[in-house]
Image (cartoon, rainbow, N blue to C red; front, side, top):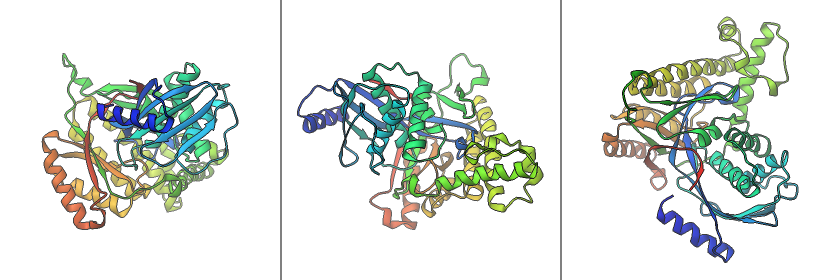
Length: 405
């Protein structure tokens, strides 16, 4: 949290609440997933980085249980009380706050609320700003109620809020990156059992000191905004589950309810056996899942071996599968991806998040940042001049997960 942001938050706090009693400062980072796209909701293998841009929180405790939260990024003062049942969704950013409390109320008798201000540092789209907001707010409620949550519990309640209250049927990738990541390591997570590793770059090289990361993160905002609950995101989840159902049916395996069915439950050899007879749509979704999990394993080995070029190539291949097998990607994102593939200094890149509008991310050579900015901006705006005022590029660094300042 830089001094300008701190000043803005304190000024906003005094403006909204007429006092200067804010006690707590918290930073919750955005995240990217270089490998492991669209598989966490099927209990697949994923990787991730948090990075040094995200959502800043400034808040104090309320003894009455009242929540009063305002945002410098979105309109509206969100008010409710943690001592009472949470209302239904209101289709604004406050749904994430209400969802966090709704999830926590299942297991805790909450007494204290929070009064505060939040501010996001980037445009919304593809970087899991919702997970950053949820995880940060769960930690804020945890702090003032002295719940003593550990990291996996924070992930659990934030994920439950987004799935069951907000209505996005995702896995735990986003929340895990926001909470678990460390600045100089790659998060490698098995979303089936929540086992994870934080892997130093070049771990297999057995050097005396840990290698510096040879890249920065490029964030390329297409200029198109989106909300996942208004896209085909949930449909893709259902298609993956149906693909698992189809393969199990061919094998006369007892079927579970669709909500309890995951592609991770179906061995790869069953897909190889039945791919040709499956409806093509479901075969493509399954093909993406199995090949993406294989790319994750290969990428982790490349990372351990200090091979950023091989790691980056796998990221490019992941995006190809997202387009051809998972079938996501707006025309703008596809154009950005094609430009990135042809741009010197980009090791690898892909759609970020769900791949519906939003942003692309890339691993870039720090020495080429100026050239990358110029090349990508010129090529993209030549194709989509209507986004001249909203297209943006940022260069960031991997960072630690959410924490108090």
